Length: 491
Ligand code: NAP
Ligand code: MG
Image (cartoon, rainbow, N blue to C red; front, side, top):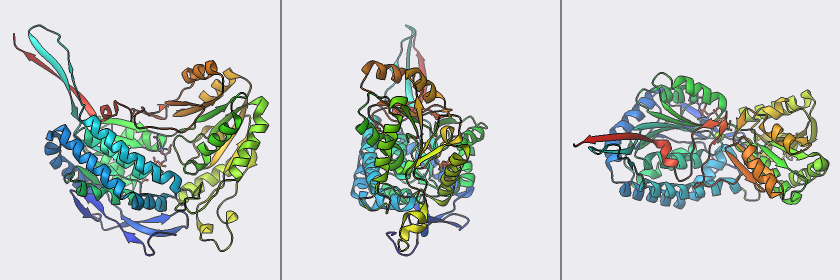
C-alpha cells in the first residue's frame, strides 16, 4: 500500500538545512488506509521554532529588498518544480492523509497555478497618492509584516502550504510553517524544492511537531508579526488567546457546517450528483466546505433522499492511490473515533439512519489490507430537529444530515441556524429566488446550481465563527501586507 516498504524519516527545513528536532524525538506518521506506520517526522518544539524564526529574521532584509520582479521569477520557478514533482507529491499527501487521487492530484496542480498567480500579484503591489495639503506630498505604501507564521490542518496540507506560503513570500515576508503532525511529509518534501527553485535559505522554514508545543511556541513568539491559521474553531480561539500578549495580526480560516438547499424545481439528478459529492467524495467529508446539512423542500424530500442513496451506494471506497477510488479513509485514528462517536450520537438523539453507518472491517473482505484502515461509508441521517448535535456540530467525515423545509423563508431560517458561516449551496431554476438567497444566506461563499467550486482568483473566507480574514482573489496579498503612510512637508 505505502509507496515505501520501510518507514522513512523526513527532516525539517530550517535556514536551508534539513534538520531533526533539537530534542531528537520523532512522531510516527500512519497511513490511514492500512493503519500502518509509513514515515517518521521530527517532534519539533520551542527550540526548533526559535531556530526557524532566527533564520527567517536573517533572511528578511534581503528578501524584502529584492525587486518584485525577481521575487516573482523565483516563485514561477518554484511552481515549475512543483509541477515536475507532482506525481511524487500527491502520492505522499494521499498516503499520509488518505485523500483520494482524484482530489489530491488536481489540488496540488491547482496550487502550482496559484503560486504563479501570486507571482503576478507580487509585481503589482501598489500604494496610493492622496494629496491632503498643497505644501506636502502624502502617499501610502504597503509593506510586508516581516516574519510571519503559518499553521495548517491535515486535510489538504500541501495545497494549503503552497498557496499560503507563496502569497506570504510574494508580499516580501519570510515565514515559519507548522504543518499538521498527522500529515507533514508532503510539506517536508515540497520544502526541499525551494532550494532547487533558487529561493534563498531562511525565507521559508518548516518545523514539524505537535500543535500544543511547536504550534503554541510559534503563536507566542514575540518576533512573529502575523499568524495565518487554518483549522478548527476551537484551536482558532486558543490561538487568538495566545496571540494577545503581543497583539499579533491574525487570519483565521475555521470550520463549517454548510447547508446545501434543494428546491423542488431544481434539476434533481444534477443536484443529487453534486450534493452527494459535496459531502462524501469531498475528502470523505473532511473538507471545511463540505455540504454537511442537506435541506430539501418537503415535496421532494423522500425522492431526493432516494437519489442520494443511489449515488452513495455507487461510490467506491478504497486505496487512495487508485484513480478509481471515490472515497479514501479518514485521515487518522482520532478522526475515525470522532466520526464513529457522531454516528452513535445521531442514533441516540433519535435521528433516522437513511443509509450508511458501517465502518472499517465491516466494509472489506477478510483478506483486504484495508480492513485495518479508518474507512467510514457514506452516511445520511434524517431529522426535523435542527438542534441535534449532528445538525449543529462539524463532524468532518462522510456523514450528512437531511432536513425538510416548507418554503423559502423556512429554508433561509434553517440554513442560517448555525454558529458557522463558511459556505452554502442553492439548487433551483428560479433565478429570482436564487438571487434573493445569495443575499440572505450567512456564508462567505454561496454557490447556485453547483457546489464546492473554488478558484484562487475569487475571494474565500468565513463569516461568523468560520473565521476572519479573506484569502484568494485579486487582493489576496493584502492579508500579508501592512499600510504605511508617508507625509513629506516641503512648503
Ligand atoms: P486543528 O486541530 O485546529 O489543527 C490545525 C493545526 O493547528 C494543526 O497544525 C495543529 O497541529 C495546530 N494546532 C493545534 N493546537 C494548536 C495550538 N494550541 N496552537 C497552535 N497550533 C495548534 O484542526 P484539524 O482538526 O487539524 O483540522 C480540521 C479543521 O480545519 C476543521 O474544523 C475544518 O473545518 C478546518 N478547516 C478549515 C478550512 C477553511 O479554509 N476554513 C480549510 C481546511 C480545514 P497538530 O495537528 O499537530 O495538533
Ligand atoms: Mg498520516
